[in-house]
Length: 328
Image 1 (cartoon, rainbow, N blue to C red):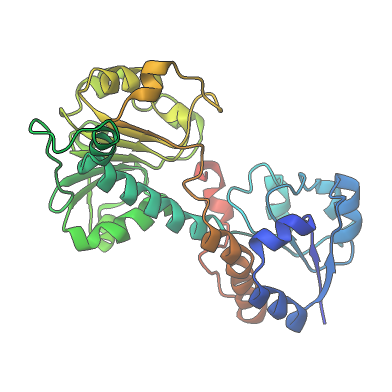
Image 2: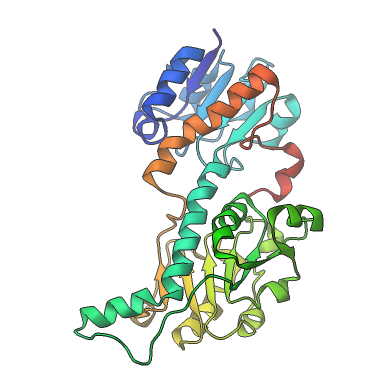
């Protein structure tokens, strides 16, 4: 029986490993569980002699020295999102297979984006505040619908694809801006490719780009000024992708609606006027953070690891070395 090292604290293991996953690990591997000490030295010692190392948030950077003598783990399974701070890409060139639960987290993010669109489209925060202040129906205020609307998506990432799936029952006209998305692939997703400018002419805009130099400042003040009046903007990817102050300027004057889960910098600092705006949803980087989603993470990557070890099949959590430079 091959060995697997769980390189995360017991608290994190309780967060991302369901009872079913623990049972599966015990069935397939000789498992070593980390204690409270997950220092680089402790993790290196734990990983020694293991075929698979299971990581998550809180696991320190895996030093490439772990693989220096050619006996390091053959698989890194990350029960969390991005692996860019976890590993050096050089280990991919040494035959190490890496898996990330980012594609499972993507579903949670997709639900957040859909919920934000519906909440803002129906003007629920404004009705909620009016009722709490003693009011009733607002004759000047009426919510809209998402069904049949034009939705612009920036980036064809896994979170974008999750949102696209969730939007299907609404019959939306979905435009996607992504230089790497072919027309053929877009057709398979049921969307259309479009320029950045055209995508930002939609009634709903959702940002799903990775944090790479090419996406910093992608949505400029000028582009924000050209957004349609009453458009809803969702950012659940990375704060630097959009001119945050420009967006807030248009939100605070009532022209746009926005839901922000990421900021530049984090955590943000806002004045009282911004905090009081009912056309603005603010959440603390929790779009991918759900009870069910977290408990599924370890099982999600381990299922793909087993398919890989048993049959050489690349599941959805496999990290393709060829896409490292554009990955989140």
